[in-house]
Length: 415
Ligand SMILES: Cc1ncc(COP(=O)(O)O)c(C=O)c1O
Image 1 (cartoon, helix red, strand yellow):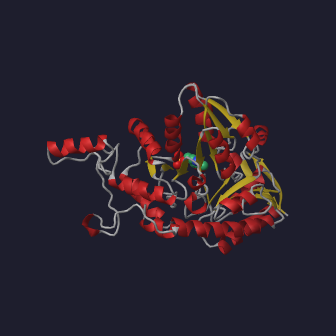
Image 2 (cartoon, helix red, strand yellow; image 1 turned 90 degrees about the vertical axis):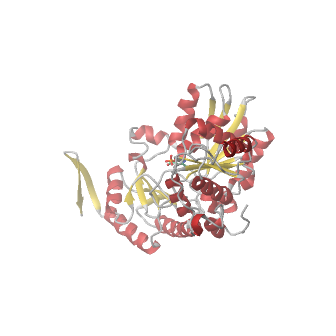
Image 3 (tube, protein in one colour; image 1 turned 120 degrees about the vertical axis):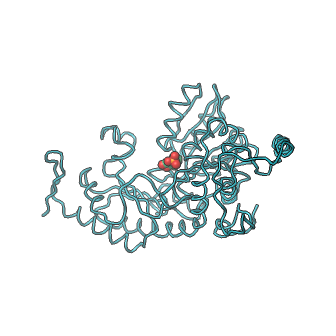
């Protein structure tokens, strides 16, 4: 493992060969679907070496490996303090392929309830069809987690921080429960990145990221990764070889390139998100702010102890109804309206209108999603500009007296 202490230095250099093809500074995009052999002897020596796990990253076909993908995997493994990584075509491919490898019919899984909607859907509907049992426990309730363990329980799945309320898992407690009962643990650490949190260092078995978010960092690619021990990652790679949900070399290169600035970007995003959260907390039009960096957050103490920064996502509710909340979002000039996070451009969305659109207000409130809930994922813009923009948009809401729907159009009138 490239052994510089600083994650910033490792983000630039780890995983990449010192001398690259043509003595280029950058790792090349090896854009090929298959790899050739000099002669039959070369082929049989390769097959023999691969059988014993000694092929040193060489592969015969793009679904089983590629040098650009392999360099990106090595860098990701290094940043998360893991032995190995497996790169995928999306974060969901990383989640589904990992769970399909670790679980089989008749096994039981415990999942915290605040998981990404599609992960929850995969577990509760798709895996259920194949005979996997699941128990959802409230995020933060460790007694319920331990009480849910059955003789056939195989693993605990969670996220940290969660979306949209940024709940933070107490990694020490979960690992303690899992190790006492001989269970595997999987933590989706997308919102934290290895710059802010490294679950493997606490004894978690697998860490997953949607690399689409901070790791890529430029809102221009879809990818996912799972990091863990070499032995278990090899098992996941076997499944990937069958499912085929690999990352292509060009996307892997974009990710490798994005990773070089990961430390710079995330530290900046930590800093401006905290400033923005403090500004929002003190604004009269804001009802409540959910950000683990604020002492009012239920997981502030655990996140301060186990994270090096609180991340770039802030959720908040307004003293406003659904339409006024939309009006606030429309008045913003810097963030784009969009569902993702972690890139250089700030993105904002009204949570009730994105992931939970098909539910009624009552159904949404039953699962804790209020109509006036906003999620802001800060980019790398200047914090003073973002605060000025939020301030003018909040002032616009403060001025609103009525907001009605006229023939399907929002009509706003001011005092
Ligand atoms: C926490 C988390 N995990 C996984 C995913 C899925 O990642 P992808 O969109 O790259 O498939 C997302 C996507 O929003 C996410 O927020």
